[in-house]
Length: 209
Image (cartoon, rainbow, N blue to C red; front, side, top):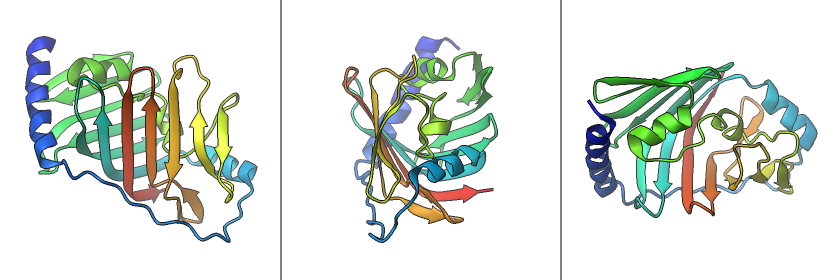
C-alpha cells in the first residue's frame, strides 16, 4: 500500500472523526490557592517519574486540517512508550510503540517503521506531533535552557523549550491535580505559531506506577 493511497484513507477516517467530535471541549477545576510547591523539588519529582500512563483526548488544528480529535492513550516505561489513537466510537486510528532508536506504527492492518517517530506520524496522518518530546512535556517537566513561567502554586504554567528540534513550540499547562501526592497537569495546549498548529491534550486519567 503506497503512502499516497493510505494517506487518503486516513484523511477520510479523520473526516468521520471530525463530524463526530465537533464538541471537543476541555474544562478544568482551579486548584486550591493554598498549594505552595517548591518548584525545584517538584521538577525533581517529575524527573523521577519514569513509569506512567495517561488516558484522555487529543485535539489537533492546523491551516490544512480543521479541528480533529481522538481518544488518546500513552504509556511510558523508562524510555519505551506506547501510543494509541482511536475514534470516539472506539475504532483504532493508529498505534505506535517506540524508544530513542525509532518507532513502529500500525494503522489499517499495515505496519511502518522509522527512526523518527514524528516524521512517521506525519507521513501517515498529516499531523505534526512532537512525539520524541512528549514524554517530558506531558508531565510538565522542563529541561536546562527552557524558558518557563511558574504559576503561583509553584508548577509550570507555560514552557518554551530550547532543544534544537523544539523551535517554535510554546506549551500552556492548566488543570493540575494530585496523583499519588504528585501534582500533574490535566490540560496541555501546544502551539506552534509559525506553522499555525495547535494541539490540545486533555487528560482524564493519570496512572502513576
